[in-house]
Length: 258
Image (tube, rainbow, N blue to C red; front, side):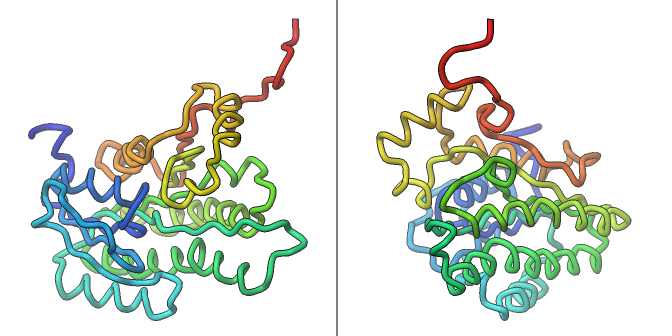
């Protein structure tokens, strides 16, 4: 494979949430395109049979654990000459009405979706700065950072916070040549979303989404890998919608203006 198909030759990438879904699709794409990948997840349960697995390092880490960032940094400094890419894909969703969300559930969602992302990014960015690597950090938001999602207040709060944090990280890391961007997926079929995608929900979603379909995780991974590549070297602090038009569509659900 040549040209664009091998954009990550000699690159080292860290992908969180890599056991399944968007994280797995991203790690796989990076491997195919030549990267050495440190795949992070709470537990790796799905076997890897993808091309390039000789360049794959599996790390069982719960990014909500306060010790996780230090453990990751120590492992990377020991085993990687540099780190070029961090894709913060790991995330969890808790469904409950706003009036019924417990402090425990709120804290857990924030610990994974926001706090964990902050400290893992800090740890990897330190390595990038120390090795003078013009790295790429890509955070994964959600269409529900900008579009209401009833019964998911902790989740939407973390995604809105993540987008604001992305802009600040981008500003502070720009002098080091490090870019920080966001991908904002819409409806995507993953292990996390599958239980809530009942036939009725799928019908409603496909009616709402202008392109009329729910994305496989590979479509989101393509956007992540673009922002992680040198092709996006002049983009930082941005958020890329990958949602089939969901967030921008203001059309009425039935009759149209005439």
